[in-house]
Length: 301
Image (cartoon, rainbow, N blue to C red):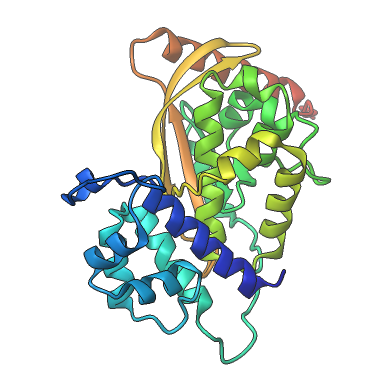
């Protein structure tokens, strides 16, 4: 299957999955008789979007090339898409448009030293930088200590670089490390789907999704839900092998480094005055002591 066929299939499945989530009552339509499909019918979405049933049916079959942004916006409103889902639909529409030349493939860029300096300055927060494929490309010492199971996992690549998605779905230990593993799995798959919409020509991303689909039943299940997440933050509960249970908050921020490369700065902290803050400080102290002991002793002469 070529990339254009993949795009049509993704548009079809995404729109159908969103349509199935909405009931007639949700949009103020009358209900009567037995319904053969969950959610709205295609003709009902067409009415809400102000287009013909034939037009919407063609759109839901993936033929979105040439469709105006006004129509895409109307469909997004009819399906009650949230901001992330709307962005994803527009990404799919842009990817479907005929290109005048072969689309450029995105190239990874190194993280500038100034970013590592910034991370290292955050001594009481675990902070790392991830790309859209969920590779951790830079981290401060506390983030490495906090996410030790991920950095020590056999799922790291040949350069020792951890990938959050690969760890969650392919390392059995992730179910112990992440207390709310199901939630972590859903969010991670949704982040990958948003990235696939932004960068449909990213071969490494396609390979990662193919690997996870082949090796993980759980990934195939959550991937089939077609959920989309662009930004995320909230609470995270971990079972750390050294520090014990940790109730943390995390915030993800966009980190512009280079054009067409999406990086996110993720910061983990604990609420002040809680046992988790004490354990996080203890973990930071252990890591500082370990690093100090690992440094070569300087000859005073």
